[in-house]
Figure (spheres, one colour):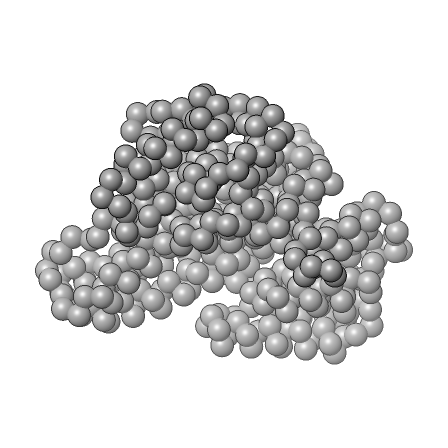
Length: 435
């Protein structure tokens, strides 16, 4: 049986035994694994492996890599589908397990930074997305700890995480609440002041409604912020103890010891003003319906903001291609909008979604579509910067077109997955061209 591990250094195992593979072959496997059984075209694999500098015989070289992988992993490990490749359906992939395992088993799958050893630019957004899932799971555990009244012991860990991840508003909200419940109101308010200053100076945005609302409630000593129950030393508390210890570097080697793992499919941007969605692990209850409705509304909010940014990017590109706007000014305009979009992308894993398959599937596709769209526009900006003079009607570079095609494909898949949920709650049905 073939098993692929992406939640740490990329590894392949056959019948439980690791198989040593060169970096390019591991990259091929990771690309196929992240598409979870769907075919990946040869053109896209070439873009992933070599970015803008493919060798002259790129397709033949890719074919050699696939042949080598089949010899190493089994003749049936990789299927040829049209002009692309797909992993055999029986392949076990750790990322695919995240949605279905209980938290304790899920945490054990994390072996370090996701996709470690793959250094091409393509992998950075994917690694960031998976890291966001890891952080979101830890935030879920922290919420449970706060519910059990263990705020005082949480403070040092939350302070460390907040310093490492200044963009995660949910994390700062947890720190504020833990400080407040520990009788440290002024320190809680200071966390808000510093977080707001950082968001305004670095991203040009105000905190979202969740953080602003908590700040207001602390100022007025809202009684509902009081500790909900007596401290508990069992259950989730033990899980967080274990997760916190694993997250710290080894005292002897300094290497990460994280074995964390996530059960959550992540979220919409807090910085964009989107409040938290509660994870629901039961099925068929009224709570499920409420959580699903909340998820749909948050996605609608996110898509509305994405639509505005997308429209501005498209208008700028049209102006640049018709020479109505100089390339340098167009690149600067794209850069400005992209920073706003990037701030949303950085927050995608800050929240949770209901555990129903439709929600999990649609949100995974939404994250990947947003990443691909932003990556294409960054590449277009770089192309404009490298061209001091405008050439009317000049075609976009092939790399941009390839990324655009990938983004459009993911958006189309998301629209199909999200449409039944939108219809169920009488929300807007989006098209792939809308965002």
